Image 1 (cartoon, helix red, strand yellow):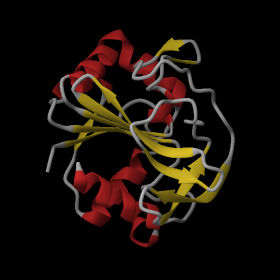
Image 2: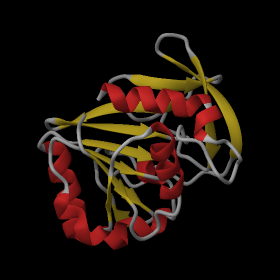
Image 3: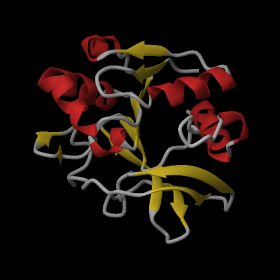
Image 4: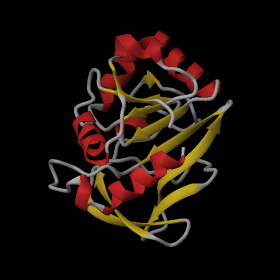
Length: 196
């Protein structure tokens, strides 16, 4: 399995949900603070969890953004969940983003457990907590969509690498009392990570 890097630096307060998921499903991973982004290796997976969106881009700075973009363009995999998806666009709230796609995602407010369907028709639950609308992003392909046909997870190519965006949380949630071992979205996420 590829090395998994988890952003746990400034603003990444929902990294604890990913770490809880990793503990339940016995995944090994490397925690990265913004000062450690240069440790990303291009054959790895970099997960940017939910958190304080406005903190990420200033914490990374121009150099950190370049490191992340170079990581993906040379073959790495970026997984942006909620906040990690917001910052993957051209801008967020006036700050230059990762620019994996041209759109700027606008902050939305909503909180609920939603049902989604994958490409094979399997149904999963996700925690929808203020995640972006991914409808205008050209996907290759859409991995999960909700009952209204809105993409909740998609894949896009960037250089030699791949970017996976999750509008909603598959990992489970401590706050919403959705432990990974009992949450269907976490089972999807486990299978997804193991397939990369």
